[in-house]
Image (cartoon, rainbow, N blue to C red; front, top):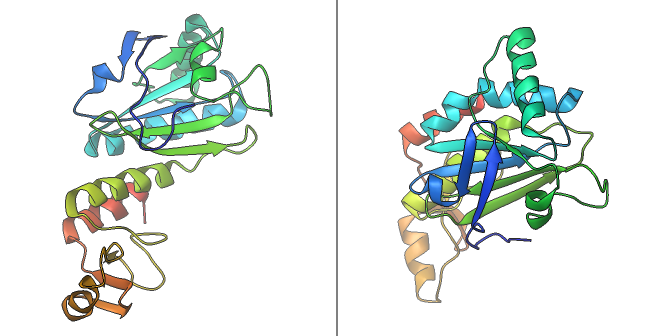
Length: 223
């Protein structure tokens, strides 16, 4: 199973929109690869509706979506048509057809909960094809799509400004929408930190976040 910090493994997959080479076809972009237990199931249908509803928000973050289950391509196509006809929303992103479970097994998406269906796994991959986050949810509980958006925005902030983000950013209970500084690398950095930044201790200092980034984070997460 691939790990955070590793390159996403190379593979060619079959989707309802044609074959895709991962991660090569998404170079220069972030992507979210998420699995669902099965087409025509209640929780998965609500998740796909929410992913589709937030599709533009993912695009604002230069991020593409890719679904996956151990269903066939025909099943994916019929399910997408059902969602469009009955829930009035288009699923514009591809869904990997993996009826033999080869991709799901390689990515650790089939776990002890079921030998025949995938759990709700999420791989967030950056524009350099590096895995930046992995989330797992059980089959019974739907994911919070706003949290996935928040996590992507946070990781992009980390890359851009070389900071770290607190719990619940941009609505942290201690420092609000500010961002944290990484721990000092050496003893000599301690004095500089306390002079340059606000904080509670030399190892807990923070700085103002870019307002445009904060506004975007609050907008895409609905906060």
